[in-house]
Image 1 (cartoon, rainbow, N blue to C red):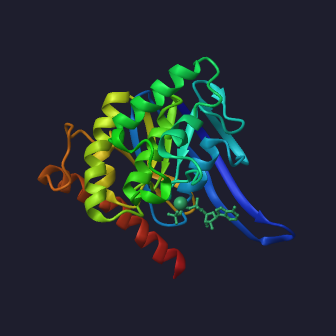
Image 2 (tube, rainbow, N blue to C red):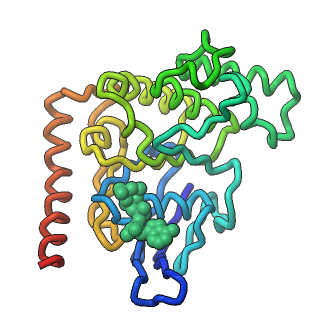
Length: 258
Ligand SMILES: Nc1ncnc2c1ncn2[C@@H]1O[C@H](COP(=O)(O)OP(=O)(O)OP(=O)(O)O)[C@@H](O)[C@H]1O
Ligand SMILES: [Mg+2]
């Protein structure tokens, strides 16, 4: 589904070469259809830059990024990106926010688009909220709308940048359960950035760990059966193993700083 080879990106501030920041340094990995890959790493290690490149919003300096064998040249509806804060249209109700994402899906009739929007709102658990305005929803419900909106156009891959970070713990727990169900129902390929190791192990079929400046230092399969619960002993143990990789990156960071 996704092939990334030798991807590099350095941000250069105009006229000041000394301020160049290397965000990605030769990142290579691939993602198979239907995988749920979680990307972990300390702040500033290039996770959002990587997602931005895959979404077609940032151009890389080096390397290749292919989706279904085609080079990624710009944003399109086959690669949908979701952020920490749901970027919804406040002047549209819940239903129309989801319907809007189907605007450019020309092969569907108006009736089919309405059916599609309805079925994805059902899937994310918002069947009774079609006519609500965005400001009337909780943060968790807004993320559910954003998820329905991202999935409705049937993208090849769903890119999620810390989608649950701004939510309270109880809302997050519920979303972990629902997210597993939604992923298994839709068979979507997902690449999700998170800071939370247990969240990564709870949701992901695979966890990639990155370190500064922009390198992948571990790529681990998570072999636990679904559905997974956050407080399951095996899950906690798997998370501790992955945390070991992250601690190594801390030590590196200190060495570099020292
Ligand atoms: N548009 C930009 N211009 C200049 N520097 C940038 C830009 N975007 C990102 N950077 C820098 O590139 C590096 C990687 O940033 P990125 O946002 O990808 O990290 P991240 O892993 O997503 O961090 P966080 O976990 O805090 O979200 C950082 O040093 C950041 O300051
Ligand atoms: Mg980020």
